[in-house]
Length: 177
Image 1 (cartoon, rainbow, N blue to C red):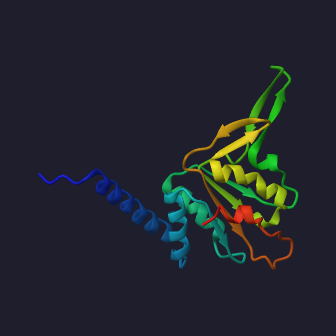
Image 2: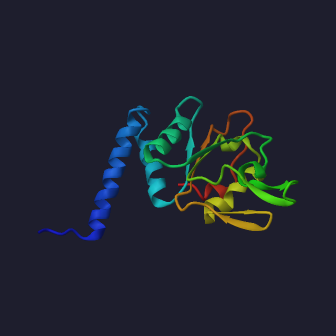
Image 3: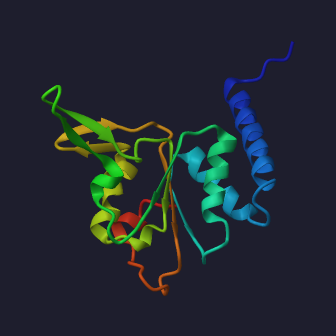
């Protein structure tokens, strides 16, 4: 009987998952194999990815499709100039009946977070993602909450010369592949 080392079996399993994911995504997204590969690399290495392109090149559809194919929990935030940090992280809300605060989690509490058109929000709002991206933790009103180990941010942006966009802070750019 031939026995394979555990790391070889694990590598073979990851290879099969990647191959299957590529195949399934290519049924929906045509001609974007390099971007698909970069996204898969980000997922399997615990990193985050910034996808830049003009409107209409299927950036949002790509991330939705990856989440569906990999069976990952998915949330989307449409970044706009009036988006507040608490719209991303969540907030404590007072319940009158119980006379207590309860956490209403924001969309950041997911496995795959699509930060759609991230450069349409001001730097203060963009920076609400920094702790989540770096530590996979979110602090709300002084209490720290964990995020899934699979937490991955897929940020999309239109080229900077488009009207109504803000440049990403360097500290945030450093957190993307």
